[in-house]
Image 1 (cartoon, rainbow, N blue to C red):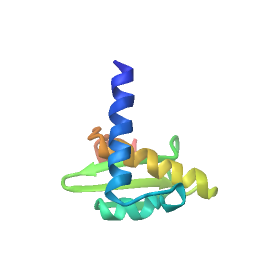
Image 2: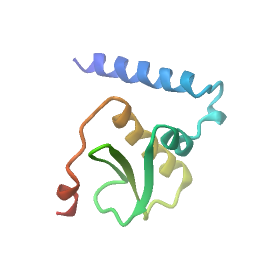
Image 3: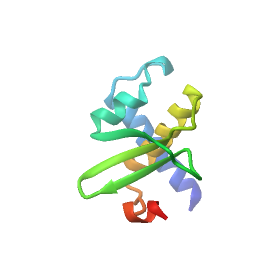
Image 4: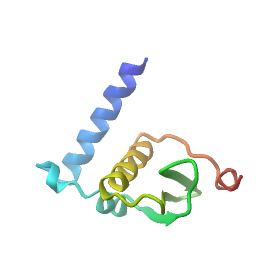
Amino acid sequence: MQTEWIRDAQRCAKGLLHRFGVAAAAHIRVESFAAKLGVAIVEVPLDGASAQLVRAGSRTTIMVSARITDRAARRFSIAHELGHFMLGHPSQPPSALCT
């Protein structure tokens, strides 16, 4: 049920904020969170999406579109993909991203 997914996502987000000691919105540093979680962030010429989570073996990368110039849009895209990472959602295989 969709409401369960939302509750799971909210619990996960609250846990992450607690884990990193976030007491106010100004303390949210998505790039730092990604680094601490072992997720690399790379800027690439990405078409069709703002960002994409890629898992390859034990490595995880968030590819962010180079066309995103707005800082808030970039942060949102990274945070969105971190949500997929934290919730254990699968990613497309790297080979599928080349088509």
